[in-house]
Amino acid sequence: MQSLSNSVSSRPDEDDGVWPLRRRKILDWLVNDTRDERFIDVIFVEMCARLREAGVPLARGTLHFRVHHPQWMGARILWRVGMTEAKISTFAYGVESTPQFLNSPANEIYNGAIEVRKNLATVVEGAEPYSLYEELRNDGLTDYVAWPMYHTLGKRHIVTFASDRRGGFSDEDINFLKDLLPALTMVTEIRLKNIMARTLLQTYVGPHASEQILAGATTRGSGATVGAAILICDMRNFTAISDLWPRDDVIDLLNAYFDALSDPIERHGGEILKFMGDGLLAIFPLSDPMACDNLLKAIRGAQSALAALNEESIRKGREELRYGIGVHVGDVMYGNIGSRKRLDFTVIGPAVNLASRLETLTKEIKRPVLLSRAFVEMARCETELESLGSFPIRGIGEPVEVFALLD
Image (cartoon, rainbow, N blue to C red):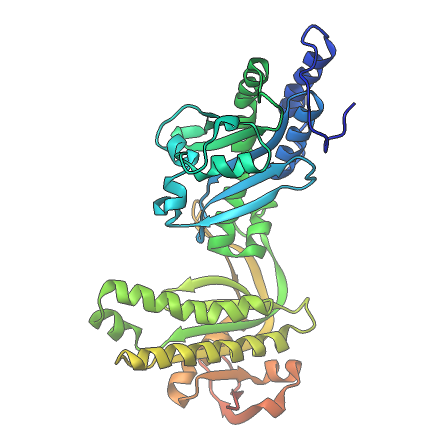
């Protein structure tokens, strides 16, 4: 048996039943033995290695997917001979209009071609329609083929293979690779759907809640009581802004505002559960002993980012953004709440209500961040804070001592 890192220099004897049997086993493995592997890149690497061991002179393979992701339009999985792990590259929205994409075999496949094939030995420098051909030839490759993979509802993705054998792929090699396509298409679609489900859930409900939902927490009322530091933030005068500003400017403002808040919250271990118009609800689970400290760091980071955003707004002749943040700590019910058919994975409870009341109180006291005595005692951060006294809070029997962050 040749090493995977060695070039396949000669075609196996087609009359020898060993090689066809090994190739058939690859198809059986792909259909029947990959069900427990979640990640398509792992499957693709093993498939390419098995193909080379079975005598297919494969030296490079790629998968190209269009994905549903808030940041990325697509991704490429690349395998080269000798690699034990794939290289995964992501591509931002707008890549489809770049010269690099327009002058590529991928664009030809996405535009309807059912096959792109190139004998790389005939490549003439500076005379090829795609620069990729010159790159592959310079890497010692001799043959290249790309095919579409058709997923459900006409979704089109791409698989490519390249050879390093003199003369490239034989007709038998090409036919066998084509025979693998239906199974590879099925296997990739299943994994892509799983990735899409996870990505969409993480995008709309956050990483922890998404894992809970994927693990089966999908019935109304399912959930648990957890201790958490709670942060609720709300923008001031958003109604007036949305009435006066052009729609696109309002959306851009909201996105920049939420970026300023969200990045430090997530960086310091917080989980954003929902955006509520111009508001935000986040928790820092007390399972992390540094949860309260991390929440304070997140607020400081958000304040710095919002200050930078306000400087930009002032330069554009716009008003500064103002905000209110309420912080409390306590037990919350964390789980599914809603109607029979429409659920929200969120937190509820008296602790959430108090954090919300403190956020509302910022309007009256004219301080942007208010924290409860309970949070301050748990965080042990009184030197960073100023006590503003006790205030009656709607729905709370006793007045609550309230603290503000020192500048």
